[in-house]
Image (cartoon, rainbow, N blue to C red; front, side, top):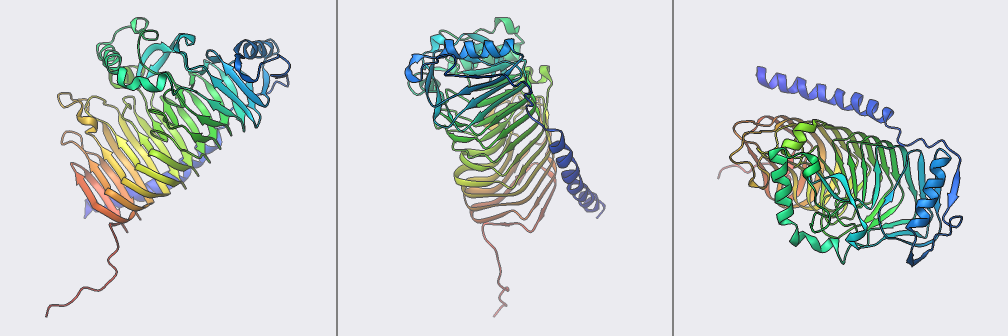
Length: 446
């Protein structure tokens, strides 16, 4: 009875914490505040817009002009602008893509030089992301135009070639190889991200349409104070995650139409040794009023070795099939922690699994002891029409059992398996119907 009372008190406290922390987080997320009034258009720098001639020199000219003015707005007018190489942004900049404007990147890997970055949670030197902001502040990408990675013919084909490089990067991670020696790029097959902000703050990305990414679409690496709003995706190439916050904080992701060839939102904080060494948790991230479509809706992990805490998923729906709705994944290679995760009023259609929490992702780490501390996961009003496999799965390990999980009003109209819970403690279910509702009186013996 005492244990039950403690759980109830913790649940009531979580409701208060949800409201207070959620509101205070919203209030401090402001995104970019670009104050310069300088203004340059693609027409003013004679940028070719036929999709054939290289417009990158003109784009660089425009940005350099704004740099000398202390920042400002670069307007990309109607047309198709081919960029033979990455677009490097500056602080105090608005990149405005007008309706009918398309930035289309060359698929030739030779145009993308080596830069410091992260690849699946391991810090490496690799091909530059196509749009890159490094150590910047107050940057906005906005408008109704299109960012087209144009990666189908080259980078998208590399997954079958990347295994040796992937394993080599992980060896370097585990053995603590100095970063300056972790060189990939030309002759290797680790794909770059379409957009990346690294060690940057006060960033807003809104409105634009994103397609044909070489790898992850938007990667926020060691960033703070970010707004991603009203984006539109049709990014269905290989591993086209929509948004990947990594070691980042104070982020608002709202009103987004996802349609991705992988995770819609995947929150990360580094892999294994690298993540624990950098030690920057991802935290205070709000995902609200989004429309999910793709492989998974919201994922935490599996690269989360520096920890993830204070995440809210609120008032979201799925506009199509998602393999898993809410997916929290780690294994004994990772370490770290996952805590204070709140899911409210979120609805999926058909899924394989509605809520899946696992400490045994991919069967990795069986011989390791870097267990993840998972606790205080609070779910209220999470539903789906059908779970092909399971409505709720919680898989801990005996050495580190997830605890303080509360599931209220979780509904799956159909489910092959309703509930599977192993190696956990302190799990509370309230008003959950997993696989249907029994709404008839029991019959009596005859």
